Length: 432
Image (cartoon, rainbow, N blue to C red; front, side, top):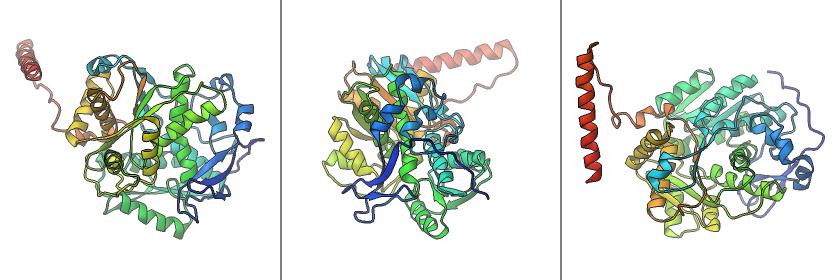
């Protein structure tokens, strides 16, 4: 496959890779681990250059996608891979807010993101644009499902060869949602952490561009756009509090980095944003460390229905822990039963069908409210990161069934009365 030609901008705004521990500097290549400390590498920017290039007006005049924030992203191409990713709705909650007793709850709904209905479309769009700039013609990933969907879809759009790796026990919707794009799909008999270790070996042996391994510093920057968009959609203001799901910890920390970058270049006024994170009890190494007051993450073996966030050894876990403590936020975990109830609660109050990660976020939001850890007057943003159509198995058996009737008015009316009687009984149980 021939490498695509790219046209660099006149003034790139990203300058180097820097170790998150110790500050060692590296060139802008496909690297992700510091050789000295083994800490993750992060992209560094020239914020003076960004300040000269952007304004609120220039951003609003840009494309209706994540690429309106191109100056803040680690790509040089004038024509990045743009499949319409980003600018998803920030919805003012009414019925859910009333149910929880909140006055200013907003839902950032990436369950409708393009093209594969999860926030992963953001990070993959950035990673594959950078992969092409670095000369990769085959791209890959280790995934719990959403990332596989996104990598396969956007690679197909970009004309890149694609081979992705998943745990063999993933939900059927996520497997189908990857295979439809015709990548090579490897289903590994093991959990995500085992898949990730295998992918590190393949990356070293085959020289492919793995979006969440050797391209990870660039890939992770795409999550900042969830911070940028919320600030812009709030009228160039920051929220008081966010609640987001935690898997590796990258999404959570990058949302905050996005807020801070807008402050640095003068796009929004500074304020403290409390950052709270959500995990499933069956895979909650970060929540356990927070609860126990530890400054290290003890890896765990995942055992939860929330497979999309089931990472037992989170790469950015320690940074998520530090962020929650620094901002006065919390990291909580909830049971699988509470996750299912969270999915149902969001659907029946706001008409949003989210997957298990979103159910975890809503369940933790509810838990924090009930514990008095969210001020009812705070502007609170709950991040919904994936679509429920991908994890239908999670709620099968926990929701109602259709009322099968004869094609007659009498049959309809009998069924309607049975339905109303059941609803009255359910409400009586709730009140008790």
